[in-house]
Length: 230
Image 1 (cartoon, helix red, strand yellow):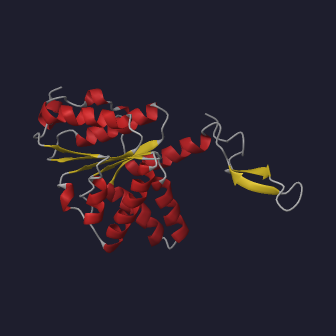
Image 2 (tube, rainbow, N blue to C red; image 1 turned 30 degrees about the vertical axis):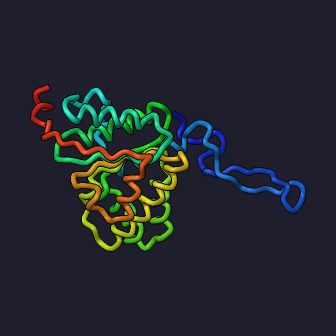
Image 3 (cartoon, rainbow, N blue to C red; image 1 turned 45 degrees about the horizontal axis):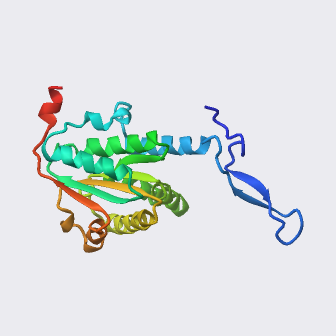
């Protein structure tokens, strides 16, 4: 793929004659990215934050052991692929396929032409917080917007991050933004956690349990031993 956008030559902006104020007035507008050059670079950047291994970028739903409640959880996730947007939440014990399903869902969405990524909550927090630590508020806001606007985002270990004041504030605001985008059909967000979502702050839980969305409790025990025998 050509590393330079043919429309804006890598600047990210193009001129548009809008005749505002006088004939021939020019405004700079964001590049439409016809060759998906900017999008691919953005996905590469987000992929580095997610920390996915090359093998994990190839995971599909066929890699999930379809047994017990894990089979039902997989079917629910596959149905979410065809939804108009919103939240899909999985919770339960360790090792019963939640992370694999998150990764498979993101890969399937991307195969359908929708940009997205997988990330653990603690890595997402560290990524955005690093902008503040560098005393660059604009950088931190750009990092926030980069993830907020993704059409598809799978967040793992929602309950696994160390919750500082910054983390609480970020998580509440970020998930509210994703919720609002989901209601308008502009974003799909998938979550995995070990704790009961009802133990999360009330404002977050109230959004997760919106009647238009699904919360799936998987009671299966760990399947990692069986995975190792494949």
